[in-house]
Structure formats: structure tokens, C-alpha cells
Length: 169
Image (tube, rainbow, N blue to C red; front, side, top):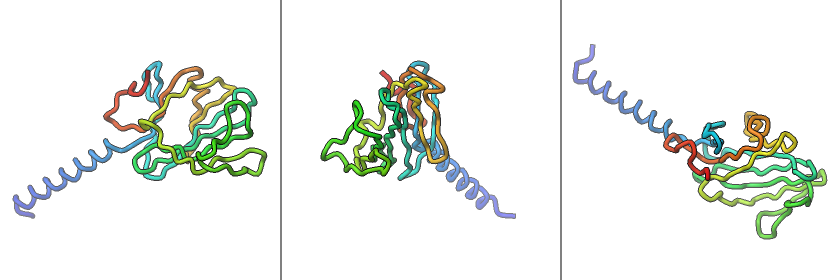
């Protein structure tokens, strides 16, 4: 049996390691979607450096699929690329903001936009079922329009220290 001093040292070391692990877990950055109406946390998805996700929807005029894709890079939410089916109302490439490439199906990708999202958060008014806003993650999609149509949400990087309605107007 170990002497009492060694046992106390081991207990102190284990306690320190567990406290450190709890601190890391509590400060884990996540992608969050919060309803500005109710304050409900709708999605919390843990992120690691270089994780990617997209917000996908159907264009409100043409119904064609559109996608804005983000990367968690350098501790920031960064708009990385955007897929647009055509040059419909509100869509298009701005010279100097990424580069336009054909998608081979009549639409195009704007690649290498690489714009940090101010405050690592933005507001979205979720559209109707026809617009079908979705959060697309590596392991599946979360249908925003099917759950909370016509509500305003904040999409943000978060952690346990934030209040539910942080970033909502």
C-alpha cells in the first residue's frame, strides 16, 4: 500500500487533471443556433479547428438550391465558399471576393471567399417550408424551416459562458 503522502499527491494530481478536463470541455467552442423569439438553444454542435458546415436553402424566387459554407479556422467563423445555381435575384459573384468556378451543372461555386464573420455570429430569418433553410453538418442536416419557420435565429460560435439570447436584437 502506498504511503499516505504519495496517495494524497495522486489524489491531488487526479483532481487537477479532472478540473483541467472539465475546464476544456466547458470552454469547447461549438456552433450554436438559438431562437431569438424563445431563447431556446436549437443546435449545439462541438467544433474542432477546420470543421466545416453550410446553410442551405432554396432561392425564394426561382426555388433553386443555394448554399453558404463556413469553416472554423483560427478560432473564427469564416465564410469559405458559396454555391449559386445561377445569377437570379440577389445572387452573383463580386470581383475580388473569392473566385468563381463552374459547378458543371449550370451553376457555380464562389471559392476562397475567406471572410471572417463579424462577431462570429449572424442573424437569419428562417424561411417557409418552400425555402427550406437547413444547417448541413458532416454528420447530417438540421431542418430549420421544418422546425421554426418565419422565426429569427442567431447562428454563432458559442461556449457555455454565453447567454441564450446573446447576439439577438
